[in-house]
Amino acid sequence: MAGRFFDLAIGLLAAAGDLAIFGLRAAREAFVPPFEFRETVRQIYELGVRSAPLILVSGMAVGVVLSMHTRASLERFGAESMIPAGLAIALVRETGPLTAGLLLSGRIGAGIGAELGAMKVTEQIDALEATAVDSFRYLVVTRVVACVVAVPILTTLMNFSGMLGGFIAETIVTGMSLRMYFNRAFSLIDLTDYVPATLKTMVFGFIIATISAYLGFRTESGTEGVGRASTRAVVFSSVGIIVANVILVRLIFFIFPKAAGG
Amino acid sequence: MIAAVDDTAQHPCAVRLDGVTKAFGPRRVLDNVSFDVPAGCGFIILGRSGTGKSVTLRHIVRLVTPDRGRVFVGADEISALSGPELSRVRRKIGFLFQNAALFDSISVGENVAFPLRRHTRLADHDVRDRAREKLEAVGLGNEYDKMPAQLSGGMRKRAGLARALALDPPILLVDEPSAGLDPITADEIDGLLLNLKKRGSTTLIVVTHDIASARRLGDTLLMLHEGRIVASGSPEDLTRSSDPLVRSFMSSQHSG
Image 1 (tube, rainbow over the protein chains, first blue to last red):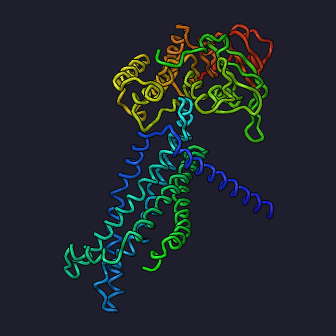
Image 2: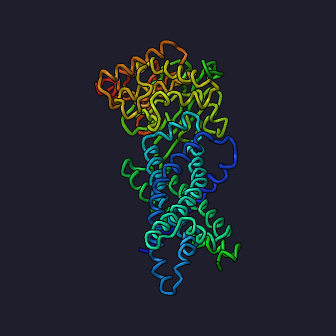
Image 3: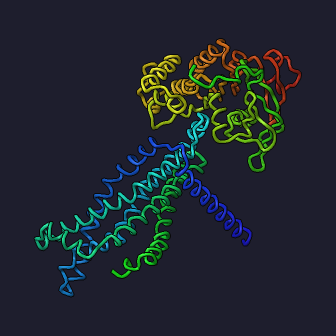
């Protein structure tokens, strides 16, 4: 029993170490030429642009729900006029980045895990190597860079669509104009709310791409392995984002004390 | 010729394995395997399933590194190379995988164009022309824009061959050319490889357990059993072998 526990612990530590080396190599090679510029742009389109509809629709729905909750809370204190600002702060500081990160870990994580896993088991990664192409640089670094670039942009899109959703909910109840809504929404937020919270999603992008690509690259056992890689990519990158978020929020509060106080 | 042809063509030995040993976990797949492949010859690696044939082939293009021993491509010890040097040597080698391993996110034509786009400075229209030529040579001239998933097994293999030959490599590695194909399609693939061999500029290294194909393509046959070389020589030498395993293998009709 104890032996099995230690075997499991050693296996987990070895996998964590392997993943850390994989991630550090990706981070390092992202800054070392030659750069796979064309493939990176293609990945930004595939992973980023094609995720936009998901983010827009989800963001709007989240905005509507947040608006309803905020109204229910603030009405009790007669502070309905604060609804747009409260919603904007909640979205920009935390709800937008975390929700976008989790949604993208589903879409992008599953996609990368399944795609690279399938390439592994059908020898396409070997074929790349045999064609004298550095498969790590071509498949992993490009996806990591694409995610690091795309996730903050998609998070901004989520914040915007969330506020739009909040406006729709608010204007149905009170008839508030778009201009007044956005004036109130932006009255309490500044760059220290937006910039650190959005930049932290670069880390989310790195986590999603690195974990998913790692699991794809290590896929074995045919199509069953591909399914497993895809599922694990979503699970591990989601958990990775949630845990990293705790550390990053702490770090943001330390560097930007104003972000903690409001 | 676009690229790749260099000292390998002149070197008397296109490929050399020197005491290669490889284990995966507790299982020793290759055990002190050594052989030379003369430039321009048809070299066939025979053996039953799981005897280390494909692993041997993968050593030559350094998809696998030996636990012990060395692998040479021409004068270069590929088993010790990395980075740009490894890439330079790999460009001398074409590899046709067992299931073709076409990149399924791009068209058949772009699969063939891929090595040209990566390793030459040809203009886009020249790359496309060249890829189309290669596809025509394997009878797939009209399939440029199709996706790999739309092709049959035999067509995929032919497209894989066109991709492997895109850079006119002096060495072509072929893993189980007839696997999963009907006899007629397998003969067509053999015919393409035979034509290539007859031209004499390509060293052909083929892994197979199709004896008829081995006799047709091979100047030298090498038989592996449980990771060791049990016989090597001309097809006639192996047919006359006193080893019952070799004789029984050579007299079998098994294909694919």
